[in-house]
Image (cartoon, rainbow, N blue to C red; front, side, top):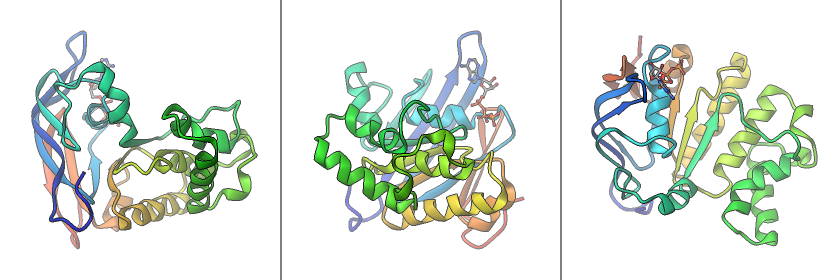
Length: 237
Ligand SMILES: Nc1ncnc2c1ncn2[C@@H]1O[C@H](COP(=O)(O)OP(=O)(O)OP(=O)(O)O)[C@@H](O)[C@H]1O
């Protein structure tokens, strides 16, 4: 991973990547794209267009069927199974349904990636509280997730995704269940993470929200990349 002060470097590189699922369903078809370190990029397209598939390939929840995929200087096409946990530590993931453990506290949910990585007890406490503080939920650390609102649960998911300071965060419809005000809050937090150097790739159907953010937008249709708009000030329709 190159530092913030070096010239831009490619963090994600899809070279003619396809994904076919068992049974013959096409997830992605010959996708080529590059995302530079420290970019904030939106991924859009209709239901079934391949947004989740693209994110899953980057997070190694799925493997490509064809093509070459490099993420963070790793060739994911060739990565050995035993190396997958190391890759996952570098990729924070956020889902629409939060995927929090409901029998654990907010603190324990956020601590999970650090526990899995074998981080020491004291360091876990320090880092979890820093992450909860960033999302404004330090005062809820002892709560059960079920006692939180949808927006708060998503913020816990966000804290969990960034607690190990990954260079890359992937979000799959992170505001799908939230009202416009809470969606803006989540986007503002993403913007803050991006400001400190985190690369973000966010899948969303919400064209209005995407337009307001004025970032690069990748559009998928039927598994193919059909749009790549670098409208820092224009609109996507
Ligand atoms: N595990 C799977 N097995 C078989 N087919 C799958 C699987 N996952 C996805 N697909 C298929 O791959 C295509 C792309 O799906 P994907 O979930 O990536 O789309 P999406 O753009 O994220 O859709 P949505 O917005 O509805 O989440 C769809 O045709 C889908 O049915």
